[in-house]
Length: 325
Image 1 (cartoon, helix red, strand yellow):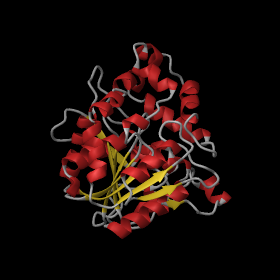
Image 2: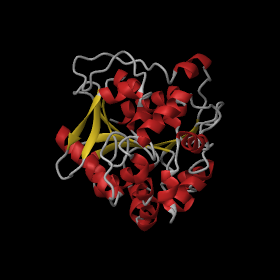
Image 3: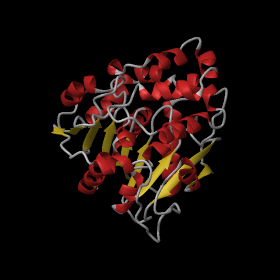
Image 4: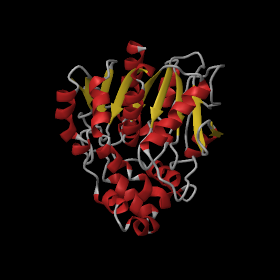
């Protein structure tokens, strides 16, 4: 086990969300300024694309040199690829070619309604992005909902994944502890709960998941805007079917993690009521060969490591991918 021992740097903490340095490259996929300062800039750096095999239009970004080591980042619920905005510049600065996308039902991608949302469909989407981009192999980093998508991708073809990094998520369904809001949205009254969702309620829900360092108001507001975009709240109850899908596919998906022969890293925020410290013993037991980094130094991290502490997560990702690609 590797325990986080990185020094707390107050200046880095203050600047981590508002201005993210980007290394210029003449072969970059997305056109990026020196910094990513807002949701609007993040969206401007990508595009909504039609993909083979899916009727939906999907938001996709490519950053960094096209010749760089491919890296794919998979986001969580109920947010979007914007969660990676603070670490993408660090990966680009290391020379990697970074692919991010909003899953169907999230962010700037289509949010069909009514629709039966499925982790299997989202894995198809990721494979379609890889096919269009010509990626035979890639490093994968997954968080929350994206963890299940990554498990399905590993179950299908583990050889495509050069190395794997897991951030807080429900890898083992028996250890997934949904908060009350998720249970309500997934239940019979889910549609009504979604209709009553406003920014204050959304912010309170996200704040339940955060560790010791509060997220800035602008970050929470951008999360809200992404979830609300394209009438997004009406699809939340359907998206939450992933919890049942995890239980149905538990043997396949947990087995994919157990049996994956490539390098695995876990970057874990312990102050997470959904998938936090209580998961750490299972990681050690089920994947003893994996590298485990627990972000338990002040400020202790919660459910969103890449958003709460990008100045720690970024170097962990760049170093890991360099070592294993």
